[in-house]
Amino acid sequence: MTTPFVCLGLATVLAYLPKVLGLVRRDPETRAQIDRITHDGFQALVAFAVAVSVAHYAGADARRATIISIAFVVTRALYLGSHLADLEFLRAALWGLGLVLTGFLFCLPLMT
Image (cartoon, rainbow, N blue to C red; front, side, top):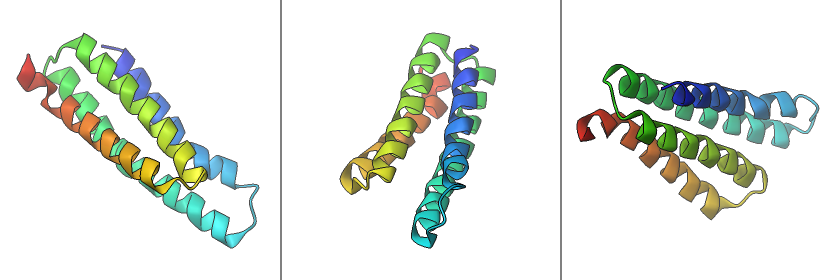
């Protein structure tokens, strides 16, 4: 079950990415938006990290955990893009999908 842990690393990179890209921006409004995106990324990362750990140590189905983890990382990448493009409805839908995927990963050991 290494793919979910690789996805955890990618999710960590996605959480730091807005801050790294935002270092060249001097506009206070843009910096505030980048701070919000970064905080959102770390909030999602904490729950995802715990969910990956629970799924791994509880012996959840590795194939399903891999699919859910990859879907989570793709969702977070799209969320980041929708946040930067200021697409509020898409951003909210992707946030909700990420939350649902994290919940599925938590519940995965119960389904096997």
